[in-house]
Figure 1: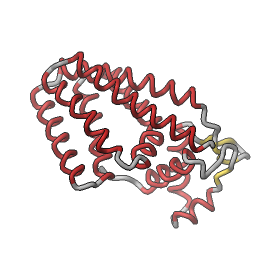
Figure 2: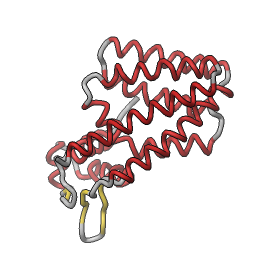
Figure 3: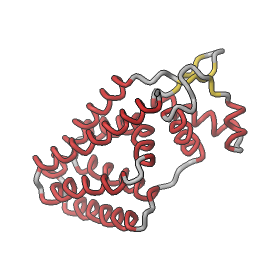
Length: 216
């Protein structure tokens, strides 16, 4: 998966906000950020737009860009909605995935296992996104798929920050994927639903703990 400069800047700024480097109410100066990343102001503006979509910053006329106070209840509510949306997609995928879609999912899972063995966390994270996207597509329900994808975009900074801060998290994530993928490929819809719901809940718990720790 290719990442634009704006996406890279957005991800790094999101990590800094979640980890308490930038405090609530603090202004993000466009020129200072551009200087930090050695880029022009254009990708910084685009990065701010991406960050605003996650709710981590807000941009107001004549007031600039400001870091928003993170509401743990709101983040928890988003994760709760995501766990249900993803779990439903997993259940439907177990029931509706076509033969080629199952082969593609199996291939992504095998490649993810390969990069895990190579300890390539960045590639593992990318494959994680591809696997979830394949499950959304395999559900053959555009409403649930789009809902899940939108929630994943909003929660991406929290999921990503947790993923890379927890030293052994990819291995824990892989073990959770084992049961999930096997259930989908076997057409076991109930196990797929429960495995996905538990998988997302685990991510939520770690993300909330990380935010809470950054405030101490």
